[in-house]
Amino acid sequence: MRSEPPLAHDPERRHAAKTAIDRAVEAIEAAAKIFADEMGATLGLTPAAKIAPIATITAAIQAAVAEEMRRLTPAR
Image (cartoon, rainbow, N blue to C red; front, side, top):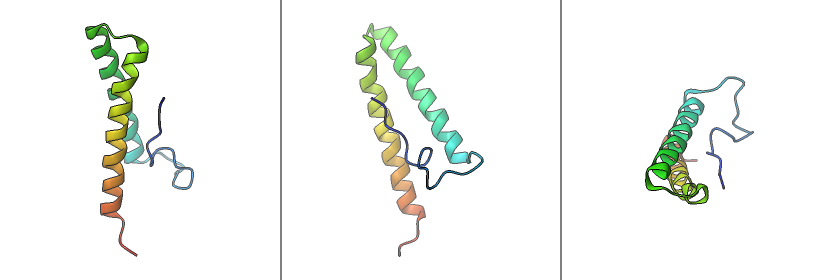
């Protein structure tokens, strides 16, 4: 189960070229997957058990991005 970060995959906000935020989101997602794979291998976790850390990390990233968006978006 993988949910997408709001900026990287929102069709209404998608740009022709990748923004720095898009590239950062992709790098963080890749790092989270590598971390979970390595941690899972070290702990001897099953592939299904490796999904939990990835989902947790993804949720934390999404919350941080959403909070930053609220902070940067002017109130209407």
